[in-house]
Image (cartoon, rainbow, N blue to C red; front, side, top):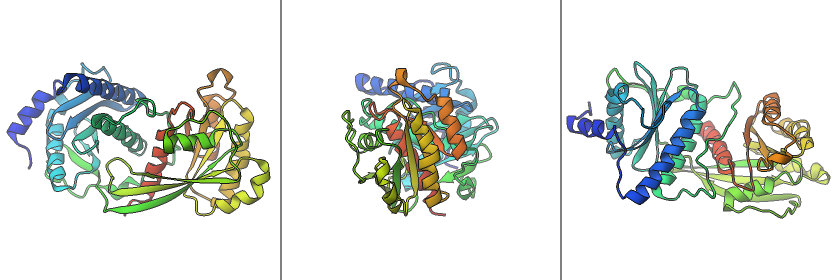
Length: 374
């Protein structure tokens, strides 16, 4: 057992109020963290509360269903302190990862948020972990950036993307089943443990499809260089870009995105399929201000790629949501289309960088877990 009285006293004291170091900088970070946690809790029906701790037991931020100040600490003290002490021990050994544990009252999911912090989510037993975990990794990355001072609201957001999963989506969590209680005792009981994999490199080919002028190139440009393109210049044939990325908590495993931006003009249709080969994922983009682009996305682009590539992950992306007054496709219509083709669904504004990074992060998480060592 790695449970020490001095550590516990410090933990229980810190549990009541976030620690502040330098008031200006720390206060600003705390506000961002609290806002982020609030958005997370409010977007997830079965997440009761979210907390961020340093490895030493200092509370950085918290938010519960009743708000930040009314989070009752009493039911979480014992299980959480034991779990945090265990994580602290593992971090010193370099084996720290993410996972979930069962307690008598709830599930605790935990995720590395940089070198010195952990994101804890206290969830009802009804929670769908396959859907929660990808969202939690997105949030953990934002937490890391805020704590490191690299979070930029001009190119990122504290909002949680409204990502729609298909009912049969699975991370195959059984392969992460915890093999022992690892010194935690009966409460909490380890359920899943996603350890750091050995250092590796992955390359994923992602094709971006859709009619001309739906914003494919701007999406890629916003993700790669954080630049917005306001003047439309059609892609001639194909444009190939690369971007290195890693899933938060798995920094040792570098992911290289090979992004194929395929021209939307009809006269390139004959040669497009030559560039489909070997794709790991397809993003199909439509413009919410042009209803015909959704019809073409489903009946044309999806069907063409599906016939050529078979069962790969598809993401249906509703772009240009900043043009709300010109919108012709509602979110409900977009969701119905995504359900029709059994695709992920997310709404973006490439011009305003809304949900752009999160979209590609979700692609990376989805593909990484497909390749994660068995």
